[in-house]
Length: 210
Image (cartoon, rainbow, N blue to C red; front, side, top):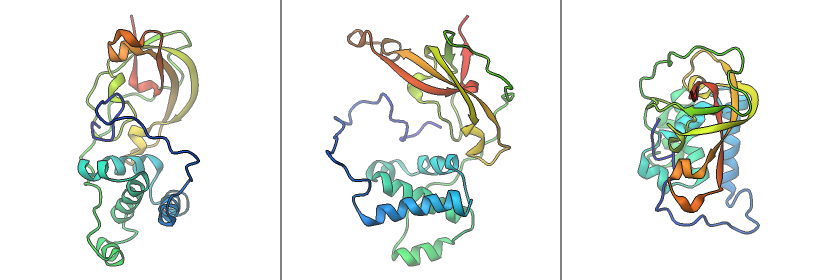
């Protein structure tokens, strides 16, 4: 889906600030938020990692941009625990002591008509183009590579297809690839000549370059 979470290649956010000796958690509650999400996925098995990512993507844009990494994690986990019936919203907000801003509801998404590939279609050295499509629901195709051409530099093992597993459809796995894009192909700027970007992509996202 296109959303505020897909920030790759966007300008205007300033430089990335790198904190020296950054701790894993700045506050104790951040560790609890992490543990809650891991419990929802690995112990309760109430949802999977792709459903979690999609829940974070469904946050209202203003909430998403104003939240820290662990605030987004807490929102995603709480949203799914309410949607899955593990906890009701009234109880959640009673414990929080105020209104708890959950992510927006899931859009009506149907599985895309893409056949499940049994084997890898592409090989190292193949030129491929990322399909240019508007995806409803969860996808792992960054907007900045859609319609762009790159080269397969590694055929990686098959892995769970996130566009399916994020919506509870029948699980499927398919080959994944490390695809290298010339920076000039992505940004159309001469001053990035000689630079490249490597993106991991599932087979359904790609088409051959004739």
